[in-house]
Figure 1 (cartoon, rainbow, N blue to C red):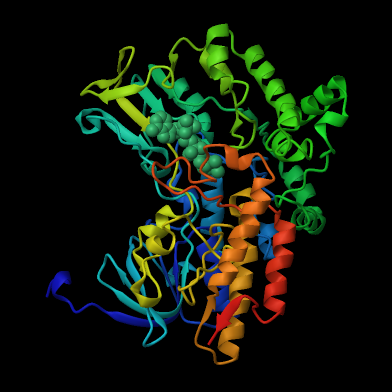
Figure 2: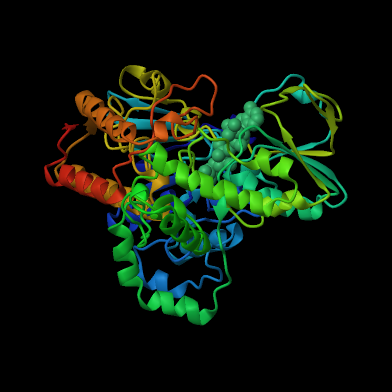
Length: 541
Ligand code: NA7
């Protein structure tokens, strides 16, 4: 009997998790090993890692320091793993997650190379019925998408795109075996955080690289460095203090040099402060310079101007430097600040061309390249570094339906709405890890994930312990949380930018601010209080 004729198997599980990145792995560990539940995990890749599995493009690297960007739940794990660089590269983080999976024996409960096709809440049984592309069926009391916030590709549509005969790549789905660009004419569309990592690496290999830029970016140096084993040990000797400082910080990473208003300092003091933080690297300028950088336009402009000066100093051709400088009026940091290593110097190379597609737009693709309103560009390979349908894209691909068969897309037709970023009204027993309107991408992700996974596990223990069937956000709680996140975001400059935080990078996507900006510390207190108040704002049955 061949596979297709087999009757689809049906499995009863307590919880079904989707995804085996940081979130899926920890959720599985907690539910299976701490709560003793029967758990199935579905993962579309052939291995664990999530984002760090797929984003293996050249230059891929984390811009949160390694000792922060890692699990804190196991002190033994923290001590065992040795980080070799201040900011880990993709392959090291992937090896770390493979190690975690092995250490906690997680892979045996993960089904790889498998995708969820549909997930429907069945009101007659109060269970989630989940089907996969391999024909399996699951019946689960709890449904937990751990699919990541930046995992659904945004590939823009251009006229005659399919006529291009060369190779095309998307950074977030890079071939496992890598790509050899030696001797190739390569083009890249996009100059966001990802492109800013790829461009210097590809430029070193390719015969020629053409960069199609729509919006210049305020990138700041990562200042990565190799860590000796002694440095790694030294950091790990103080892990308790390091983690405590992280949990008590706004972004899940402490930035102790943060000052009050940028406008209270003299120009000289400001420049000295910016210079110091520029040397510190990473997100020091973005999160750790002055408290009003993301709130006050005049304060913001002082830092924007500092970065423009740096760009002009680093790029030899003044015309190219101006193309790379975000213009006055484009606020700094309202789109995520990319971190770079030799990005601006890359434009001093003879084999790199920068094309401003805001000035001369891409008109159409041809078999050998693409044509802008100015000229035709020929290349052998094309890289899309065009970002993601953040937060909602991967959830929508799973055909999730809640009470009354309501698709999640319909519930979120005017934009994603959740209670606490964890739960949506009408979708009982479904929990989103780092979902819309939680701190997620503006908090150190592994810690944001731990915060959510632990809250979800406690909640499930509570429900099961009391013999309850379901927990679900009340519609009014969702309204209130949406209003609260909007109010906090509106006090900042962030909603003005066309960023993926707003859903503004996807044509037609409703604009709703998708991140809770009150800070991780405050958020943690809120969700812990909700739990302590017997899950206030939820309906339990
Ligand atoms: P981003 O930050 O969304 O950047 C995408 C880039 O692609 C950006 O430069 C966009 O220009 C450009 N883009 C998108 N659509 C188009 C079209 N239609 N035409 C031309 N250019 C386009 O994604 P990244 O992958 O760089 O980073 C995402 C996150 O991943 C990052 O913040 C980290 O958290 C990890 P635009 O600025 O929209 O003009």
